[in-house]
Length: 200
Image 1: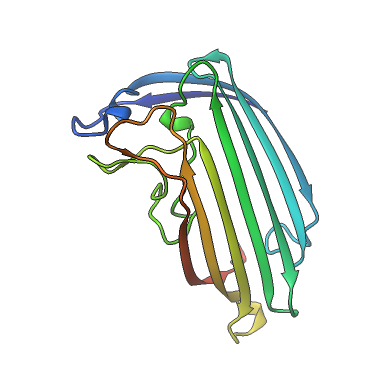
Image 2: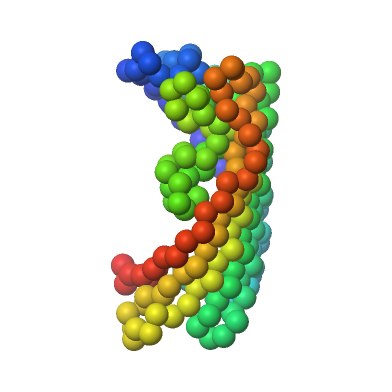
């Protein structure tokens, strides 16, 4: 795939992190990438058995203002304990290497929100402790263990319950200042949820 992207960072508050303020302005990304995806799942929408593996690479620098190599590896395994009780594990590891330049915030990894339940969007990873701004990181690892089970409702409702635990971290800034907290120590959340498979 090929991506041409224009980023415009403007109207940055005066009390924002110095790291954020330094990136104000317009930048272009020219990125070529590939993805290898091996899929042995019984369903892409609601898998109950099988496994998958994915390798993604992005190279920026064929023109534009950013030069980096980003590699992300992910995989998952689903195992039916019974017809309705499904156990699964998923994991992801990624690293972005700046080529002759530091990696910009908009190109870094972030975790939180939908990608890491129990934490705010971009809530996991390096932060400016003086402003509480999230800065992202060059290294990411995360994992999920989950158990899906029926709630006793009619099957046609397509509603199930889930128990999960998410663990992971984002770290590895190119240049961290005195007010930056950057650690690879894992963060963790444990919780329950309800999934509704909508007819739409």
